[in-house]
Length: 322
Image 1 (tube, rainbow, N blue to C red):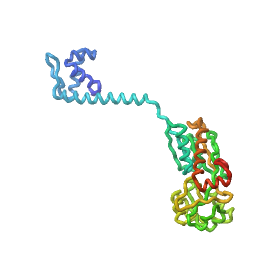
Image 2 (cartoon, one colour):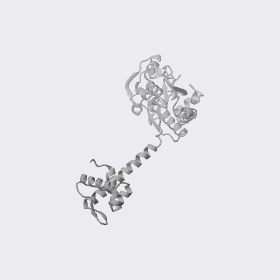
Image 3 (spheres, rainbow, N blue to C red):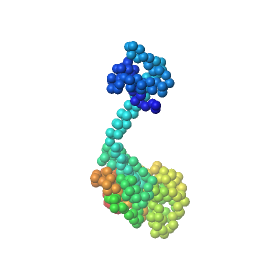
Image 4 (tube, one colour):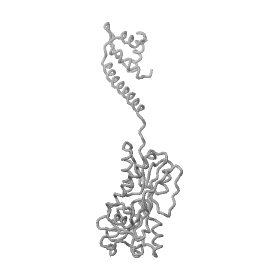
């Protein structure tokens, strides 16, 4: 005979009833059938569990041991059933809103806007996506919402399932050490920097890539990119040390020891566009999210001295191409 949980219930019933006859009545089986079953159970345990007497049955030492462990096992099994049923009856967890975009303040603005608009939804954010990859992930519904950053002359095809709304076209500024010979100028021409060493930021971190090189060539020189593919922090440190200059988007306060200067005619710029899957959780509230991100961007411009001056000089509000 193979021992099963029901056999432990038999032992427990006999022990609690104190006699085989009372246990048989409670279990609704014949006394002879219960006696035979108990005999087989005792054979499996290798010894007598109960001592029979005229007044009923009493547990042997082995019976006491089996009873204690049987109660423990049955209790744990009941807990397993209860917890499993409770888990089955729980509603499916709501998937988090999945966000992406270029590193910088605009992603923090997007996270805040979604949190304010959908306060009960969790979020996840991934920043390591090139524009084409980001669009593919949106089309496959593996992202819900993102800020797409692209150069004005670079086309990105949006799948039919992806909708878009323009946020802002922002200029790139030149970052220089505070004691750089050109730092005193309020604005610069790209040609003024022809003899400078440059640090370029990784493309996925908002680098200007080919657009930067084409703009330099249009200004009459080939840039001396001696430090390539840096992260934003490394680029800022190289600029501060005076080893290089960099073209950066002004989405954060300047690093101490550096200055940001706009370029005449802003030849380096990018378009920031809000893109989302048409059937995602954010589709129905995209107007609120878009408005909140634009408002946050406007507040960022107002708190950024160099950027604020640039906007005022061009009589533009965020969202204007300048």
